[in-house]
Image (tube, rainbow, N blue to C red; front, top):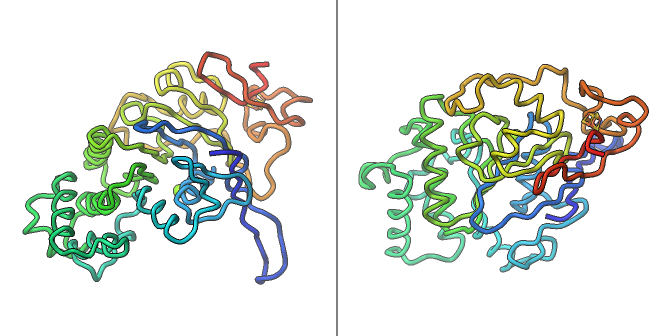
Length: 318
Ligand code: SF4
Ligand code: MG
């Protein structure tokens, strides 16, 4: 991902231009095949917009995504179809993600049909394989069911099965468990991690919850106001956070190792910034306990590498 920007024009009464909401505002990173990464940040930090841009649902304002050597901005027609088949999407809200009038068989057959797998036997084989992988019980009892007949956890398993049915190499999961009962969250996260390992998939998690990522991600990207402010391997980031924002996020969690932490505490530092009028200088400066007047409120900090392989955009590392 190279210098990605996804801005949205904001208009009043449909025509009066108010400004640009800078949802993604200069994000660059590499994902290795087979890696599991998490993008962490508060709601409104741009992480869902980043996910939807990676999925090809939003067109970047600037910058590009290069996937297996193909530039997303240049993809059209058949190539775009190939890209869509290669990238699976697990939505936040299983209740809204599944069409209520389709049974599970049809929900899973639909992407196959759209992508040209029309042979009935082949469809059935693939459907049963993914159902098996997401541990959704005997196919006979599940395939005829409609979403409302399934629990939230089961629905999310169907969403995951649907994301897998085209055999993608990358899965993007946007807050895959935040709408689910606490009792099934760990199960679903474990399921995603197991499938990722077994299929050697690349997995990009979007989450606001730093307390669960240690077990599900190899690398963490912390997002703030449309940017990645810190990135490092998971243990380095959780044990030696470098950016004051990450430190504040971690301080807000009683026990980062509690995989079933159900409480989602907010950073006790006031409101997240506006993406329409982001603060000048470091975007975190109005909330930062270590902000240095004359520097942080004026100049945008570049990315430093305070420890090997550990990057943080903060003037304290200068
Ligand atoms: Fe805080 Fe300044 Fe670092 Fe921003 S650059 S996080 S305001 S110390
Ligand atoms: Mg979101």
